[in-house]
Amino acid sequence: MSLRLKPIREQVIVITGATSGIGLVTARLAASRCGRLILTGRNEAALRELSQEIQGNESHGGVAHFVPADVADEAALRRVADEAIRRHGRIDTWINCAGVSTYGRLMDVPVADQRRVFDTNFWGVVHGSRIAVEQLRTHGGALINIGSAVSDRAIPLQGPYCASKHAVKAYTDALRMEIEHDGLPISVTLVKPCSVDTPFADHARNYLTSQPQNPPPLYAPEVVAQTILSCAERPVRDVFVGVEGKLLAMMEHAFPRLTDKIMERSFFRAQHTRRPARRTRQDSLYRTPADAELKERARGRVGVSASSFYTEASLRPFVTGAMIAAAGITAAALFGRGGSSSRHTGILPHTFERP
Image (tube, rainbow, N blue to C red; front, side, top):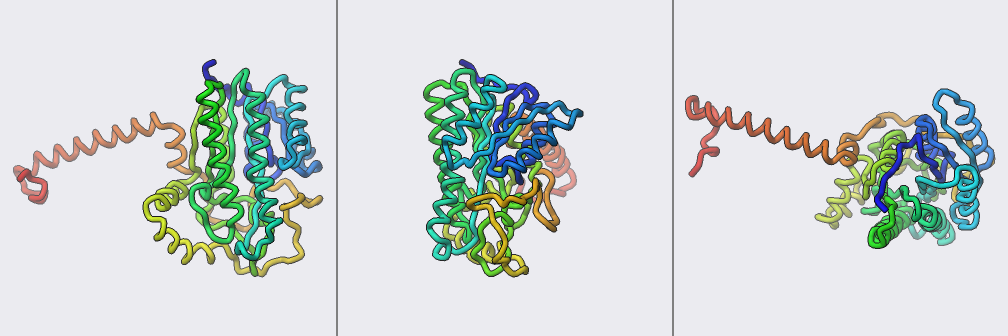
């Protein structure tokens, strides 16, 4: 069966981690494009509020239903899939977006907390991916896993998170090869965002002496959401959201020891704020606080990029190729004119002459 992905307006989409940050923005954007959504997360009150918000907005035609679930619980995630099938008869795209983190040195973060990061970030992706493939293998569709720029290069103070995202990348790559080998009509995509302006750091368990933050530069969550939905409509192997992630991966490959030194110099300080740590605050590592709000952005962050030319170009390689070709032709034409005039004026340096 050939792979054909539908427009968002014709899709039934499952989104995990739908009540905060990237998952929340993706849900709202998909609803604005008339998608039919099955939303899941651990906070039932927030899920209900989001579903009612989407259902009550008659201007876009989006439809949303919800099933509370912890992605670490495979049986609970299966109930999410069952609800999608019961209501709509199928699933077209499954987006594994749930994630948690810790901030602190590896020797300071308890093993139980590190294991919990893997339960959500890695095993949640495994559970969701297995369920999605079972549903998509007959009629086709898209599986989109959210990795990170740290899927390719670790940073200090978020060791368990980096390790879990490395594991997500390896699992997604292996699953993709097996699906393609078997000829299944499923697009498997790994989306790797750089730092994003979400409540990620506020929700993380913190073992630092100050309040943590995502290291700059920051991208708006809408940039990631738009990338995710593009991958739901057109097959993409993997994509960085933000050129910095690509540069970091290239540095890791070419100059790993130098990259270590750069990280050691800058990435400790970059993840600290000047605010002292709030030891009484509730994080989302094991459970979402009952009073948690639907929140897309972090507090008080400025200088957030609203787009990424690199990511847009990565999603449209033919357009990018045409742009590069046009630039090459233009440069050749300009050089040709310059070379012609040099024979008469001597403006260009002699190093351009043939030996």
